[in-house]
Image 1 (spheres, rainbow over the protein chains, first blue to last red):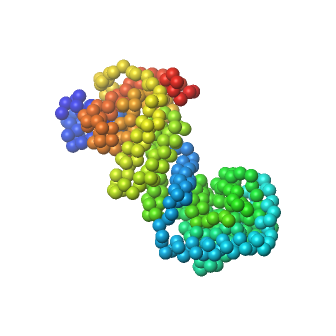
Image 2 (cartoon, rainbow over the protein chains, first blue to last red):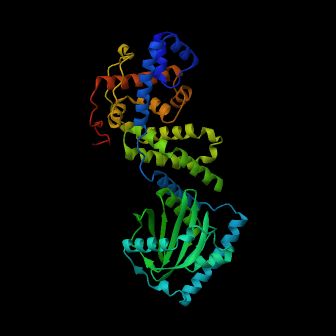
Length: 248
Length: 179
């Protein structure tokens, strides 16, 4: 090795000195300064290359993929899995019941949808969530498929299969109306989902309030609010929820 | 299906950020970079069953992104400012390099030719070895080492000589990078 080769190799990878370079450096200690300079510049380059990534990038990728999967699922029937079939049977039964219930006028609340301002809904759901902190900790969802299906049926929805990571599901009163309160346990923390039937919102709304990230989603016959500590959590919960739940 | 979904989420969690950084330095535009990353993951999801070895995921994603960039945007690449070719600065052995503002160094990096910029991003951001870069870019290892060397040499020259970075990256006529 000579000085030129040493410099070339150093500049190609300043932190990867092989044995031959280390020996050469020991014999030529005057080159130590050059190594330090190269490594100092390397740290600066590394820092400069690691540009900030737009917030919510991962969430947007997952949401896009979720919608594409669902589009594909509409074209291709899912594989027949007994578990899925069983849920589909319940779903079919639940949907039939719902149609009858609406026909008979049992579902009074759905007859009239109340238009609301997004800011008001956000205030209600945050207030409601903070009033019920225990729901985020407990593991208390109905264990039977029938009971769970009935909970969703009561808010105008059916389940195609259980929602992944769900730790809590129960009726609640929000803004003086019956709703459904759901908690999912995501790896980075819990996410709250509240279904508010009989209420109406003009368009989807993402929000950030009281330290929570969230979204309000208009669905058939109501509103769904999803709230978590960051956008990724919300996107994952969004995906898991709509993979399992259908509004009828 | 669930395993595929879990695996996909792991890929997004592990690589989305660095893929965005790579795309950004490739196309020099944040909006296009995000589009490229989105498109890369869309294609990755569709072909995820073909990825047999999890360890190959990094190179696989980069390959998809490069292909997408070539297909969708490469013809719109803005020109770069070519600098004088100077191989080895002899006077730098003892002179400490000035500390730079991050933004200034980013502008210098932007001015590097894509041929020099891309290997250095793969090496530093993605931790690729010279051999891996050579495979990815379909180059000889010696060529990769030369480009890595020249990329740093040029950056060092710009830092030492205080070359003012161009404040605007001008588009090619008809290109989409209007500033």
